[in-house]
Amino acid sequence: MPAALAVAIAGCATPAQLPVGVDQAAVLAKVGGPAERYPLPAGERWAYPSGGLNQETWMVDLDPAGRVAHVRQVLSMDSFMRVRTGVDTEADVRRALGPPRLVQEFSRVKLTAWLYAYKEDGLWNSEMAVYFDPKGVVRKLENGPDPRFLMDGHDRAD
Image: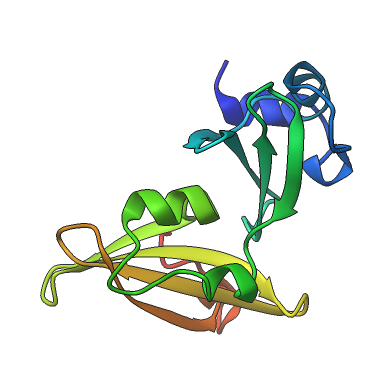
């Protein structure tokens, strides 16, 4: 069963309600399987993008015994500001922020942008673009309004 379907079947429960210490079987029963999994030095991180507008991604960190060590929503200015230009790679960003809402190529300048929608300060419909060079290294970040909420409201992917 695809991960997105498993999450939908799990209902409206979000990882925010998971108590620290619960085992991964309880996580799967409560919120379903993650969209993506990432290895950590001591355990594993599970990504749960949520909401119809893709403005939240919950990360559930599991310790080596498979128990919840930490749960947090990562699409925030605080998380974006931890991304290091010239240092972090696509794998680092994916592990920190989860899957992007949209990927856009800028062939003329040889950059690829991963676009993350989020609620800036819990209020503004914003979008953070993380730009990668051809080697997959972060070159810059750019914040602005989410274009889905401008003018006629059409998503640029439409």
